[in-house]
Image (tube, rainbow, N blue to C red; front, side):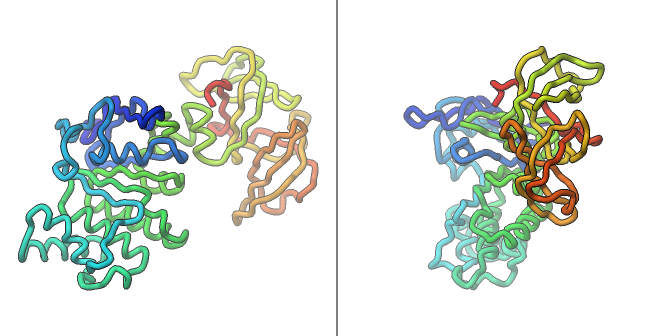
Amino acid sequence: MTAFLAVEGLAKRFDRIVAVDDVTLSLARGEMLALLGPSGSGKTTMLRLLAGFETPDGGRVMVEGEDVTRVEPVHRRFGMVFQHYALFPHLDAGENVGFGLESLGVRGAELGERIARALALVDLAGLERRRIDQLSGGQQQRVALARALAPEPRVLLLDEPLSNLDPTLRERTRREIRDLIGRVGITTVLVTHEQDEAFDLGDRVAVLRAGRLEQVGTPDELYAAPANLFVGGFVGRSSMLPVTVLGPTEWGTRIAVEGVEWEVERPAGHPVMLPGTAVLLARPEALRLGDDPQAIVGTVAGRRFTGPSSFFSVLTGSGATVEVVAPPAAVRAGQRVGILPSRRAAGGLHLFLPETA
């Protein structure tokens, strides 16, 4: 992949707090990368370093081979949409979009044309004179997008752009943003703590924790092949169980879990795990309910209904809670059940050493 935007060894400290810790990433032209992680993981600091609002303590930012690490924000040609949009309430929609253009010296007929073009791009054509307080939350978000895109930036930065919208509007606006950025073809970095948002919008997703890059990959890669226990637990639904590794088998690893023995597939290229303690990360769809001597026995503690299937929480004898997907009427609360690896469990059961948490 030829890098259009790259960060190399980027680092930032605030007193004793390491906000960004030696992060290296690259994006292809037109790619959207989602920065995903819990609060305090360094996502927003990364975005501010890209924008030039913060100066890194180490590393550099490159765009099309140009080092812009010390370039002022206004000269980087980056567009940014802030979490709270930062629209000026005393200016109408067109004036908000034109604000950045005017600061670049655009005037007269060209200014009006570029404002109209930017608003049309976000499906707000003809609303130039609409006051900000007369626009819905979704429309305000699109005005902010139009303002960021009007100067024709090289890179678009989005800081939690949908966090102020209600769930229904958020999902619809997410689709609109995905379609818009696809049409424009602009290289984009999105910051979010919402996994659905990251997976829906990002061509690839970078998972951060405490300033460090844990893994970067497509949503499918992160879900099916997490690099460590943190990524596996943070991405998607899962249960974690302490297990004992007994040894290798022809195609996987034999483990002891809750008093029974299971065999877990070993991913291609992964080394054989030596006997000892480990943690089993299990996706709900990789488990099934069944009556078998090799089943983990537990009690159904609850159900989360999702339509044609439900997520059942089962409390095991050791006190662990395991989530299993099954038809809504499969079992009832308080019922004793057995849990087994699903026949379609490939890719859904992962073994990690405890220190990778």
